[in-house]
Image (tube, rainbow, N blue to C red; front, top):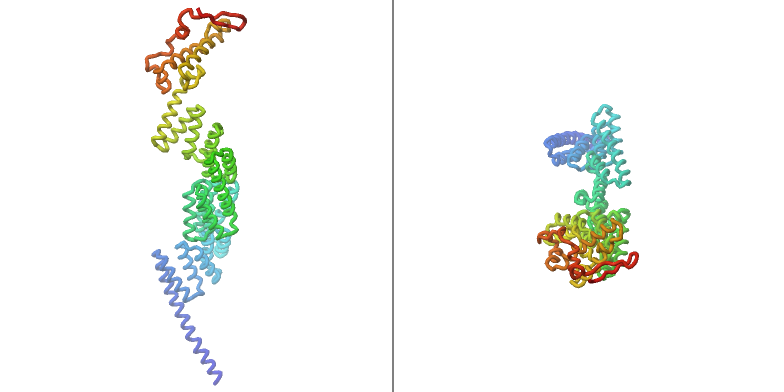
Length: 494
């Protein structure tokens, strides 16, 4: 009786369990069918819910995990989908779709090598499977793009890295590693908004992603927002204390900020030599920081202009605009140096560039002034011909004319070669022109303002330099040149 009772007990315990199991299977199939219906309607959230109910009823069914993996993939939740796909093939290693989904998840997440293994397994089970064959090729292509990108990054060919990552991301859209590498290279290429966008997308999904924080900081750093950049680098280092790139960037940012501020302070205090040294040291910290270095070159150019090293100032400003061709301040500084060194054509070019970018009254006037000086520079420089300053007095102009006219008078060079006589005659005529203009207040004013003298009705080719000379020295027969020995002359007044 005891044995029979024990058996009854056993039967009583197992029969309902078997019935529950069958009911569970039927209910699970119902949930699966409902999930399939929602999947077909592309309502993946509802499909996910019903596949989950099916799994809860029958957690050992590989196809349920496979279906839920497919749904999660459609929702872009590849990491969760990978877990379901792996579970499906653990339950049934002959489940070809399970291996395909596992491989697809690996590939989408950027693990091309693991993807290859999954696709190879699918091909072992079904060697004619077209999807497995294509996906295997895709995974190998991604590995090749990775390899090329790694080599190109070392060569600093950032454009090619971006190209490779774009191709790889076509097959691995959920790979944060590829996106970060692309974003970093975009930052190195100066395409900051694009780089920021990629990093921000990742941070929205994972706010603790140290690589994304580093790229955000890098963009700010390269845009010369150094203080904000340091904050992102510090945050990245909190998430990953051994993040080497963030560590180096943080150190460079702090050093650059400090050195630049010290240089600015020295400049404001009038210690131009120290300011020059500090800006030079700052320029050696990070050659990749284009925008900050452009400002440093312009600052050093300003220092050089204060030190009257105008050629060095021009070179610094040129380096600045090479780094940042939109840097208005550098063009203005260089244009002023060109004006100071009488390189008016170059000054006009720079002021034109500035005015095209910023059409302000001030920039228009600077351009107009440079154009006037250019126009004036193409005429004869009567001040230079007489050897006087532009602010010379009437007496100084007369004295200068007396000296130069006597120096170049043709009679003084009557014994010279024909070539020398011709050159001295030309200079004598130019001296007469210069005196005619600069000794007449009205003509001098027009000349100084850059106006055309021909508008006065005076053709400078028509006047006689000898008449001006005679008039200056008191009329005809006022003097004569006499030789007193080889190369020695004196003049006599009549």
